[in-house]
Length: 152
Image 1 (spheres, one colour):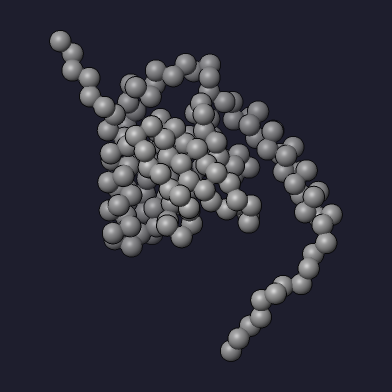
Image 2: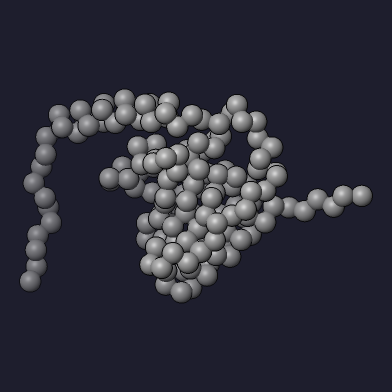
């Protein structure tokens, strides 16, 4: 009789995240952006991966669940909701010294049909098209002067 246990990844992720914060480190999450169901800003993806800052000041509504990692963050001032299936989480580490963990492949996450994976090239092409339209909107809008002032 074979005993099936739950995946270790979500438990280790939460433990390392807490440990990094307890030691005043900045937690960085490495994500496989080609994994099925990942919703991250594709314009920041390099070689199929994206590194995300999970520091409490950098994210909002962080939920490190058993199935997914979900949070909101700003990218160049634009708010985004990110959705990361647990199978797409590759590693978590400290920005300051690189201390952390790279997760071992677990069979439960490998059961996903490879045909469902998002090709990196097509995802990048889509974001390049959308980033052009965003940059056109930004450049066409009028720029107002800053409301902030320097106090000495």
